[in-house]
Length: 141
Image (cartoon, rainbow, N blue to C red; front, side):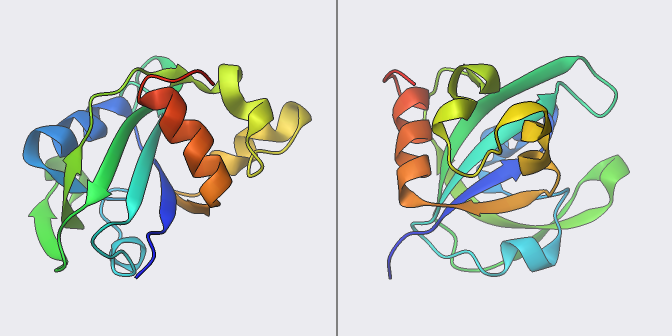
């Protein structure tokens, strides 16, 4: 099966937990968002803020590869019960969205660029994935 590419929009603290524990999730564990994933799918995390009420981050901050072929549940504490899949994470360099958004087809031009990140999960093209992953993994945006 061919890999699919996704953006997950969550705050930095949630990504840190996912990295520490080796899983991917979307939108605080929404089941409908995690079920369609398959091993080999790629997830790039965009963090608008540091935590729920935190400071702005507005950057792509993580790159994961789905490894789990089973949906699991996890207690997200204050966020409730959620659904996850096992994953591995690569070491990356944060990429501020302002540095790369003009190169991404899924991000609208102009002042409405933020609408691309209003949903907790977005599938992206192989071209957009290559641009983002290349920049995160040490290339240039």
